[in-house]
Length: 170
Image (tube, rainbow, N blue to C red; front, side, top):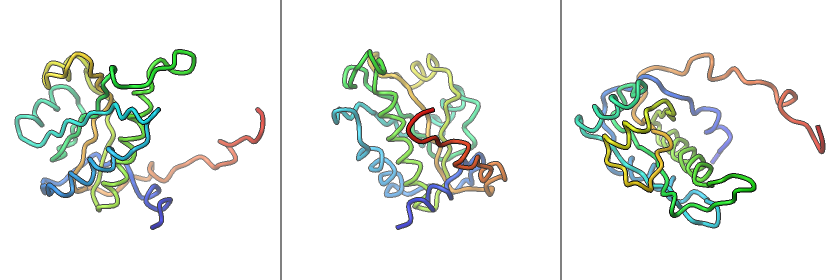
C-alpha cells in the first residue's frame, strides 16, 4: 500500500454524482475514524451519518458547502470525554477530531470515493437541526460520494519542502 500516493491523490471534491454509497462503504469510512489515535485514547469523537433527503436538506440549511454529496458525516466531540491541557490546548477534542476526519477522508479515497472536509457551517444551526446533546461540540462535516468532476490544478499546487521545513531551530 502506497500511503503517500493515496494522500497525494486525495482532493477536496466539490461536485458529487448522485450515485449512492453502500452501507459497507460508509461503515469502512466510519471505522477509519473510530480507529484514529486520540489524546490518552479518550476517543471523544462522535459521528452523525446523514443520508436521507430530509437530513441532507438540513445540512444545506446549516452550510453553503453541501456540494450535493449523497452522504454527509458530522464529526463532533463530547467535551466531557476529551482530554484537557490548558497549558497547551484547552481541549484536545479539536485535535482528535482532526485526526479522525483525516483518516476518514483517506479511507474514502482508498475506496475510489471523493470527499470534502467542510468547516463552513453555522454551529448554532447545526446544534438545532440535528439535536446535538449539550456536551457535543460540532467540529466539521465530511461530504462523501462518487466524484463528478476531476481535481482542479489547485490540488497539485504545493509549496516545495524547502519553503516549509527548517531543522533544529528557526
